[in-house]
Image 1 (cartoon, one colour):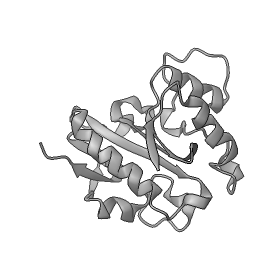
Image 2: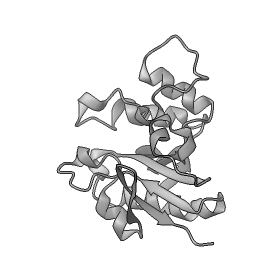
Image 3: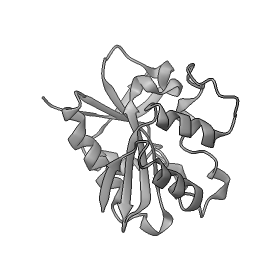
Length: 182
């Protein structure tokens, strides 16, 4: 497996994944384009279109959406949306006074590759690179009692705990955090 950072040069692979494989078994989500945490829309977005696909394209081209793509045999098979917490408008109500928090908001793995360690490898890559990029806190928002594959779209709670994350609470929001030692 190869893991690459999302950017405008591999955006075509990312869209191919979302358009053709990401939700092949859950079509009602096939128009999300991983934009949920970028709402309300970023103020700089002035486009007329209300299509999430167009918004995602703008976010990627303007380096607002970040994350990692997992590849197998040259084809995108998985994705994790991870970025500085301050870049997610949806998280603005659970901000703290901490300066640099890296937030993981979404995992999507192609059905044929689920439960084969793809998400775990993406998470390991995030943890390895967090310190290099000046982060001391990684935060995620899994559902503890998710009952289906789709309930774990924020990443499986158990995966985070096995990777050294701990339960944490900010006001009314339950989340998990990992402190990266210096």
